[in-house]
Amino acid sequence: MGHATATFNGRIIAETDTYEFVEGNVYFPPSSLDNSVFTPSTHTTFCPWKGTASYYDVSVGGQQAKDAAWFYANTITDRASGLKDHVAFYKAKVEVKAE
Image (cartoon, helix red, strand yellow):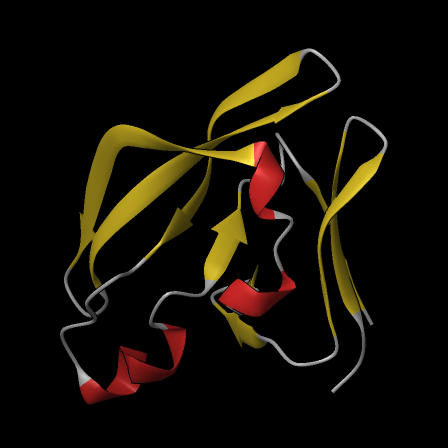
């Protein structure tokens, strides 16, 4: 597995050498996040095989991206268990690169 970064407003907000890649999205482990830029959102969505996704707003240098990141605190299938608490980003809001 290669290296992955997530960047918002010129700042790396997540970086790791171990990640999950599912449905075209990089899921970053919680330990790879710069927690100072994430604020919990009230927004949620549901995936029939992953479960309920909770969202974060991302703020850097006075710019905010609402509901830019999501994670599954409780996955509902064995197939999704590796995604638990990992964070993915909307590519239209946060630049994600994976090698």
